[in-house]
Image (cartoon, rainbow, N blue to C red; front, side, top):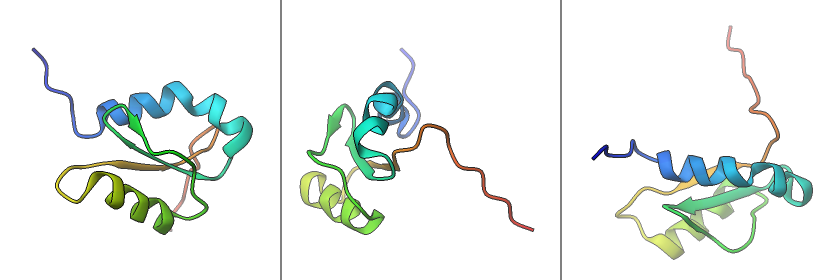
Length: 77
């Protein structure tokens, strides 16, 4: 049996919902652990982080990801 990479399940859940979420929550932050999605979307990373810690604690990973249609690309020179 294959072990999932860290946050692989959460990234899959995000990918499955990205298009739907982008319609009404574009630019907001989602919080996911395993297949559990925190209720609501957040205006800032900090608010999302605090909601994740409140719901999931600090002993396991959870994903915070901003809702975009495509991932932004950043260049560092």
